[in-house]
Structures are given as structure tokens and as C-alpha cells.
Length: 189
Image 1: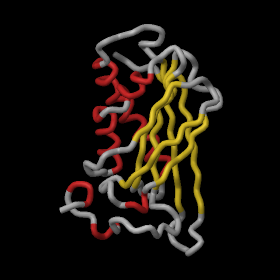
Image 2: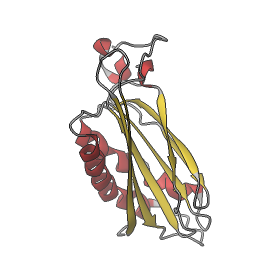
Image 3: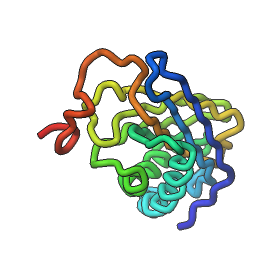
Image 4: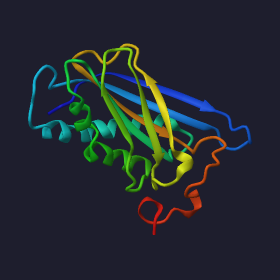
């Protein structure tokens, strides 16, 4: 199955660190694709899952380009399905098959990539959760990016979203695993 991308959207939010450190940049890249299953029930979503690998590669490249010259250290993913589709269509597009190229592109470990999906009409907002790319327990990276899709998704579309950040929250100070203490899977030994 080939996924047809109808349009690309990209958003960047950059804030200076009041303490003089690296600015906080948040990047969101959106692929608005034609939903091949809109308007009908399909029990086997495996073809959609398999096709998501190529989409993941393209989105990872675009998101990494938007983050330059800064290095991506946090990520999240999400999707908004148009009203003729099912929320499960977005979930099928966001499995490990989609996420593996993202991890490979930005050098992420095996940490869980947080996600959010929903079904909505054009103009919807969605909050994409963010976590550290190598260790889920780095609490300073618990953040989110709100994406507003003014003219998407159409009823027969899915908006697939990748979010990258270059650092944790500005002035984060509520504890958690420090960056320098990341070891093993999710930062644990």
C-alpha cells in the first residue's frame, strides 16, 4: 500500500533560556494523508501499519531538518483522523513500524515514544506529549506541543504528527533522572 501525502505542514516554537543556556526549540511536522480506509470498516490494518514505515522515514527527515542546527533530544507523535475514519487508523500509523525510522534518524534509544490520537474535524487542536528520546524517566523532558490544524484533516484524511525538542523544559526543577545519569533501558541499570 502506498500512502498519498496530500500536504505537509511544519511548525517551530523557539524560546530563549532566561538563564543563558541553549534555547528551547519545539518542532512539529505534519503529514496530511489520504485515509485509504475512510468510510468503511476494515478488520486487518496490517497493510496500513507496514506502509507507515516509509512515512516515518520521510517525517523523521523533515523533522530533523527543521530542528537544525540543534540536536533532537526529545520526541512525541500523534494523529488526528478525519470524521469518515476511525481513531484506530491513526493508531495503526503510529506503531513501532512508523517509529523505528524516527529513532534511527535522531539517534534515539529504545525509550517509549509518547503519543496521542483522536478523531476530529478541520480546526482541531491536539496536544502531543513529549519525553526524552533515550530515557522515559528524565522528568525535565515531560512536556507537550499543541498543534492546531486549521484546514485539516478533511473527512477522508489523517494528519500524522511528529514532534521534536532539543532540550527539557526551561528552568525545570521538579526532580527526576538527570541527563548525566542515563543508563540502560529508560535510564535504568
